[in-house]
Image (cartoon, rainbow, N blue to C red):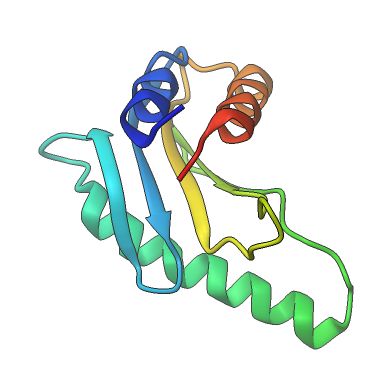
Amino acid sequence: MNIDTALKEAMGITGAVGVALVDFESGMALGTLGGGDWLNLEVAAAGNTEVVRAKLQVIASLGLGDEIEDILITLHRQYHLIRLLDAKRGKASSLFLYLVLDRERANLALARHYLKHIEADLLV
């Protein structure tokens, strides 16, 4: 599936408020959907790039030899889910899906499950 289709699929997840596909090397969003006046996805994409970079650096510093699957940030009214994309065809990936969920309406386990499937089908 392409970026637009992937973003639409992600917005179909119960409780979804906004979604972005982000390159953490540049901090730029390759695509966004949803958001609104109180959720600027471009700003959120840039900010969450720093979260991903910091966590990758810690993993490297600790010599864990592991990879990030996803990062969850839990707020009182929202979940912010960052899902790193697996590298495909031997190329390293610097992309992640960023999904904001309304905590009262979302099922976090199902959202993670659906986002994993979207990631698997996404071709960039």
